[in-house]
Length: 124
Image 1 (cartoon, rainbow, N blue to C red):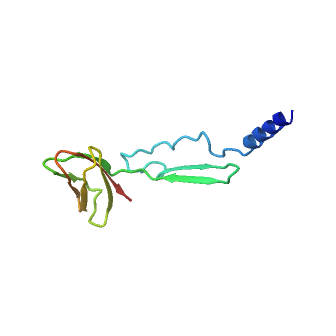
Image 2 (image 1 turned 90 degrees about the vertical axis):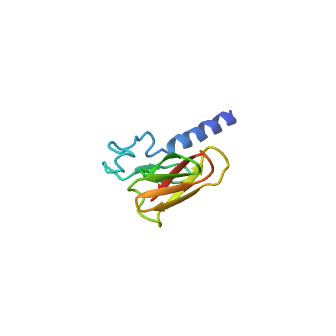
Image 3 (image 1 turned 135 degrees about the vertical axis):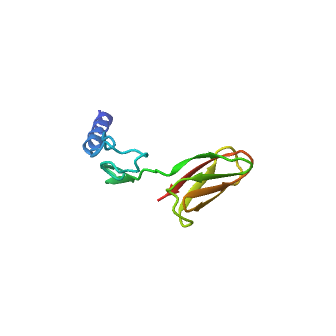
């Protein structure tokens, strides 16, 4: 009987802790295509629990994609690359081969090995 009461008390405390923000959907009008020019500039999720409140803010990534190398190089022309100070993450999704991404105004130069596929994303 004591074990049943303990389990019931724990379940009651867990239910009472709340979930302030659970079940919220993403705001309407936000997509990666429009660069967050809709109702908000990102997604925001908040919640509360017995461990305290938490808040997550996600910015949409509008400058990302995948390129296939031809003879070890590729150039992605996109106006989202504004110069050599841009931070760009590149990953070789074909294999464990090295890859180099060099941003410049209006383009991203990618070098690697053979015809590997490279995923890239500019970090804002």
